[in-house]
Length: 279
Image 1 (tube, one colour):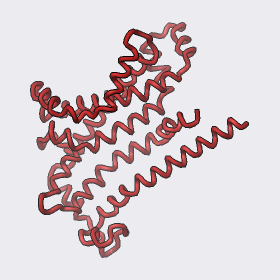
Image 2 (tube, helix red, strand yellow):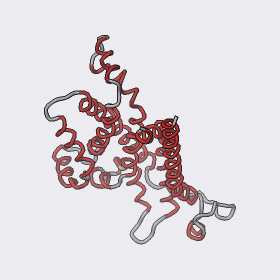
Image 3 (cartoon, one colour):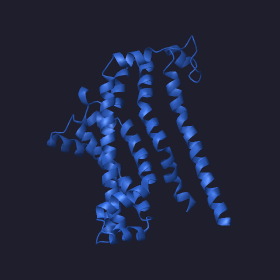
Image 4 (tube, one colour):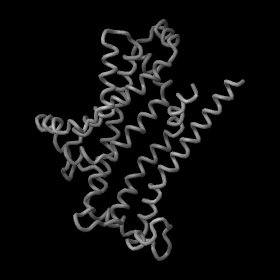
């Protein structure tokens, strides 16, 4: 009884902490969205107030839709993010399954090597990556961004998923082998459904840096036809004058996919984050 009560208390505390963090994290988002519907003077006069009949304005959204190809930028970001997430989850889950399931020479060293990607920022290799993309003819292509973001997200995916896959019952996998299931079927039919909370956690934590990144789109794909939404929003930021209405409107539109993804994966995300807190 004491163990059940203690476990329930830790679970409640973890949910409360996550809810508090969510409220704090969403406050700047709400401020951005609210100010995107206000005139320039109202933004600086009262940034925390709601728009009224005197301050309400859609000039920012009108500027975003009229100046630049916002829908193309949005499409590029969506393609890069979805493709990168797919590869990160697929290859990361397969590598995590191999490291957690099979014992072979170099298993520990391979895990440590992949974990180094979490500690060493990929941006340190920007010059080498740019030279590689130039030699491969991939500059100003979405493929370059997809490859870089896949490499960036794999270490964290392998690290998280391998820990969860070690908790999958060995008896369940052995029963599948006895029934004649191949290793691929065991992986896709038995293991993956049981680690969905971890997959959702990896997806959310991987998607946000990719969607919001400015560094690699600016270096690897700055052409008009390959701009991402974050890079496209920079056209409204000048050296001497910044169109804050357009910037806030562009950011508000860019936030929507992140919020949609969070709503879709919120339950699995909470399960994935709190799984370790109740053990």
